[in-house]
Image 1 (cartoon, helix red, strand yellow):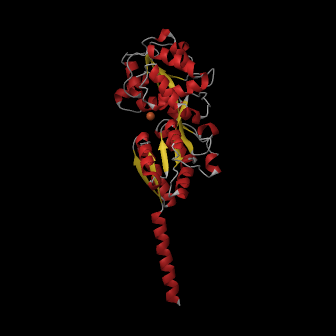
Image 2 (image 1 turned 90 degrees about the horizontal axis):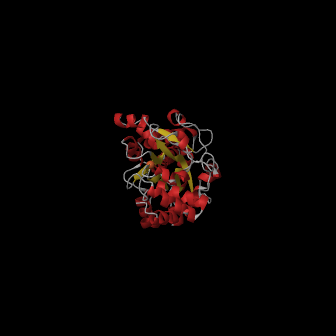
Image 3 (image 1 turned 135 degrees about the vertical axis):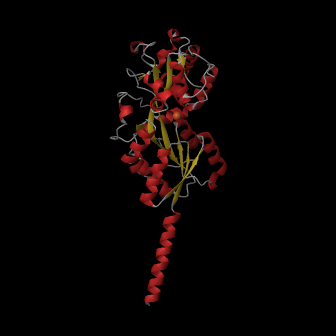
Length: 337
Ligand code: FE
C-alpha cells in the first residue's frame, strides 16, 4: 500500500515536472534589444515558462505566419510599428486577447479596437535640428514643413519605411486625402536630398550640413546620445522639437504585440503579455530603447524625460493601419522615394 502511494507520488512529481518543463511561449518579434532577452529570462525564472524567440523583420514574420497557417508555432507577434500589427489583423492572423485586465492597462487609442493587439511602448515622430541654423521660433507643426522657406532643408528617410507611412496615414486621418497629398508633394520639394539611410543617418546629415531639419523617431536621438563617441558628439549638437503642440499633438507610433490566431500556448502567451505590461517590464522595455511606457503611472528614463513633456496625438492607432495603403499610394504619387 505504502509502495503504491510513493509510486503514485513519484509519478505525479515526475509528470508535474514534465508539465513545468514543457510550458513555453513562442514569439515572432521585430524588437531586437538585448534587454528584451533579460526580461524574458526573468519571466522564465518567475513562471517556469520558456520563451522561444524568432527575430526578423516584421514583414518577413508576417509572411511566415501566413505561410504556416494553423501550423504556426508562434503565439505572439511583436512589431515596432502599428501598420504591421494591423496588417496581421486584416489577414486574419490574430485573435482577440480575452483578458480585460490586460487590455485595460493600455489606453484605448493604443490598442486594437477589437482587442487583437496592444501597444508595449510608445515613441513620437519629431523634428530634430541644429540651433545654429534653425531658430525654435521658426518651428510649429509638421504641416508647416511644406512651406517653400524650407526648400532643400528637410531630411527624412524613404517612403518604404513604416514610420513615414504611418505619419502620412495620420495626415490623411486629420486632413483628408487631398490635403495629405498636397502636403506630401510640397514636402518632397523641400527635401535636402533623395531619401537614404535610417533615422540616425538623417540626424548625422543635419550636423554634416546636408539639411537643417530631420524628421525622426524620438528614441533615435537617445541612441545617438548613448552611442559611440562620434554619435554622442553629433547628438549633443542637436535639439528636439515636439511638433503640433498647438493642435492635435505630436504623431506617435508604438511597438506592440498581437495574439496569433493559431496560438497553441495561449495561457502562457497571456501571462507573458501581462508581465510585459507590468510596471517593471514597462520601465525596462521603454528605457532600453529610449521610448515611453504605455501603462499609466510608469515614467520615462531621465534622458527621455530631459527632453520635456509633450502632447501626443490621441488618434486611434488602428486608423493608421487602415489608412496605410492610401498613404503609400500618396507618397508614391508625390515622388517620395
Ligand atoms: Fe526603429
